[in-house]
Length: 466
Image (cartoon, rainbow, N blue to C red; front, side, top):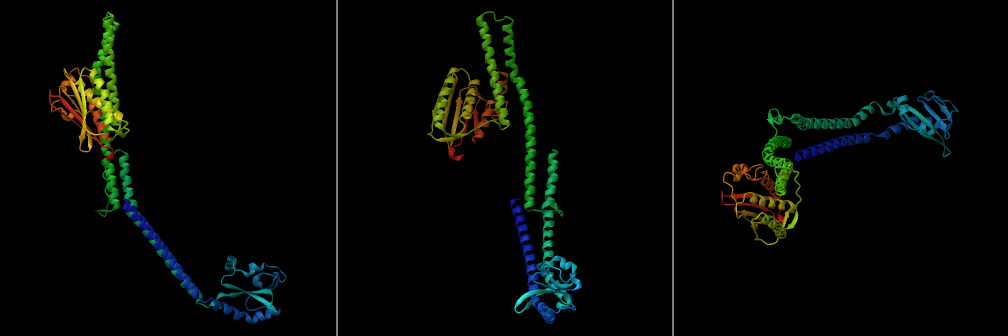
């Protein structure tokens, strides 16, 4: 499309320059022809025609002559004036106005030529004489024809320039404006929600494969993208329905438990202080579980809307990882599980959001804790995978069956046995991990066998590749 716009602009400029050159050239030809007309020849005719009469006027001999004339002194006082001048002897006139040629003269005295001469006596200028002489007397019958021949190139040049502009206008209308109008019609269909309306650029039963065709192709891509977004919106609505269904399923048990224990306290079932403390502790635990599930739901909703804020920056990875492991180790050991970690790479810069990556690590650890068994162990290893950083979380938990592995990173997914068990969770943790890792340009995977533990790993890109 940019090429098409460039060609149209170039064509417009070329057409404008060409039309301008033609008009200027035609005007130049007219000027040259006009200059070839010997104006001096006509002036000489006037001098010859009026020479004898001027001598009489200089002597002060005024009287009717075959052509109208006016005589005035330097002050503008009329010494003699023919009836055509509508002046009387002794009147005062504007000398400059009388000597000059203005538009009113041409209107009032059509076919006449005004010519003025200086009156001298004893080498002193003492007045002016102004003659009105018919053009045909001076120029002859061919004067108008000569002037017409002078103006003809200009008229032709202007006509050609106008034709060029009109032709260019028709071309742009045919090959630019009409296709844009068709695209506008297609756009109106899109506004109405009809993404199935296919727009094709067809003239004379032929598809034009030019830059406007590229515009059409781009427009079709846009339509396809809008259609895809519509499909994604429908999928999002479906996901929202699934969310409601999962919330109903996953929140029902902890809420029912909280209600039951709260009623037990109210009804005096917990009779002593120890029983009441136990009931309160269970209520607190279930409340914390609800808070965690709600936070997961909020994060995944933000992820779906691309509003989960990720602010990457340059981070020294080994320092970050050691600090994170010290924090996570204390948390894991509180759950009565063994924990170990190792670093198998040198210090290097990684472009990442520390807060979000730490959230991924905690989610993976939480996943291992949920599906642990007695004498549970968690190991975290940081190493290199080509130019990337690879972080692995290994445990000796109950594992995941091969049938479930392809779906572990899907929203709300948990294996059937897990869903029917007492293991808490929303099924969103691994989905959130996948979103965060992919936003960092990395990949995440899961390896596991039933009753053989689980390995989940993800990669991060080095700073120089971001």
